[in-house]
Image 1: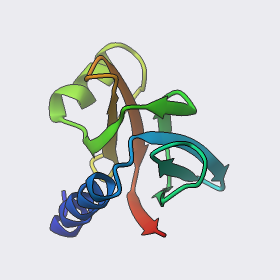
Image 2: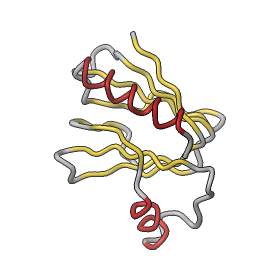
Image 3: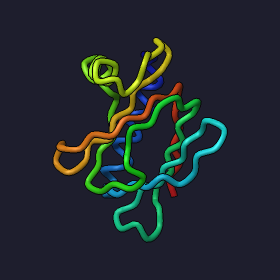
Length: 118
């Protein structure tokens, strides 16, 4: 995985913590791009995350108490083993939202992501 993706993820995590964001909602999905907005109260969003070239989504459209991180190799293998996805290309990045004290996990496979804050 490329260093700039890791750095961008660290920056995203810092922004989420700084703004006390733990509520996320799917905002838009078009032409392989998934937009997710985040806030601390679902009233006004403080951050928008856009995943590019999305190939797989295993998630609720709205979730609370969430943190985002890169998925692990074990999670990639588990998704294949449990027939959630047939194959994961090397260039696909697994993103994971963990919610409700790590009991719920939501996955997105995409090639890249960007985020925007207000």
